[in-house]
Image 1: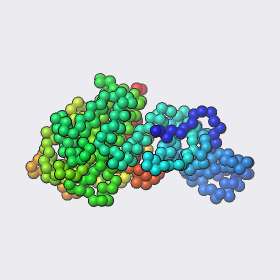
Image 2 (image 1 turned 90 degrees about the vertical axis):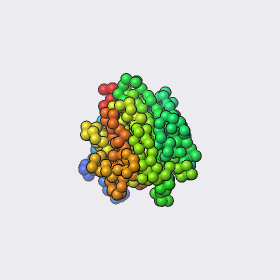
Image 3 (image 1 turned 180 degrees about the horizontal axis):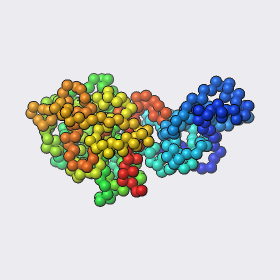
Image 4 (image 1 turned 30 degrees about the vertical axis):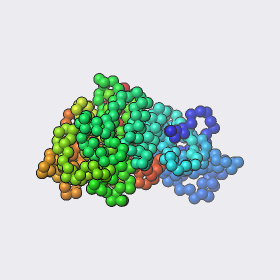
Length: 460
Ligand code: BES
Ligand code: ZN
Ligand code: ZN
């Protein structure tokens, strides 16, 4: 279900009058005495982002003033659908196509709520689609962000590996993509030993979800997402506080499904592949142990320093499989480390790549889309922190410092042939509410990445 509330039919909308903050006093002098005294009596402070309802002669709402400061962005009006009285509104200003599209996206996302388990009776205000907006792009973005948020918000009890596979099948089915899933013991047959090891203790079987779509000769874009439907930490068990939010540990998987949905919906001329190792990191008699040495798909042996560093294990096998076909662009997204959250906080995607040109493009689109990223280094001199006495590599960095970097370096060992690779370590969750972004699951990086892939490979 998409909360797509942008009206397009001819109605009688109430205007949202845009007034620049710096221009407010001048604007006010030109208003009617009724409105002047109303604004005065409200003690209205003309600060960017604020709104004020203007009364009509009959006591109804005649218009809304919106004070604008700075450039338009996707979140500029995202608070309005929930704060304005129910009704239909229209923005009167002139917009570029991007601005108009962003405003409609933000407005629509401002009506998002996760109401599967608790009814939400809130009524939202409706916006006429701003002139010049790309309606398909609005629908595409809102649908993808909604999908990601919903998947992250679903509790682990209702979204285990099998249910995540079903969600992926729904996305694949919508666009007639090919899907091959490798489940349970078959992971051993088809050489995904670390996906099997991490997920085998759970009642819901581990699996590798593999979706392929598009012209086989088109540029290969491959997305890999961490699909840990619940991360208990395994035998190196997490604390209660550390475990509480771990339903969101499939946030990377949700993100790449959302991005894949956008790419297929836009029919971008790429050969898309989505790989999602989907597991629950559970505790049982057959759980993998600290000290175990696993042989990965790539053949490298991995000593388990900590079973809670499970994401990099399942991603390593998925990345190795992705790498085998030498993709042009390989992107992985994962709720990989607490250390990334210490480094850049909860609202920025920590970004790792050795490809400077790729990062420059990511940074550009991140800025344009207000989809924040910050680059951290794949600092080779820290590789020794992953040394193991008896195996090729340890899955947990020693010493406890630079944990997001050592996690990135671990993944790097499994990517060799891809022309370009980037790794995102994300929160996948809003811990505070902001306009258009309620507390709960969040789609980090997808708007920036869609813009990048569209620019690089889209039809011009
Ligand atoms: N899923 C967690 C990382 C995580 C924790 C992301 C909190 C966001 C918020 C991951 O599987 C994990 O537990 N990583 C460990 C690795 C350590 C044992 C080397 C971590 O970050 O502490
Ligand atoms: Zn973990
Ligand atoms: Zn995890």
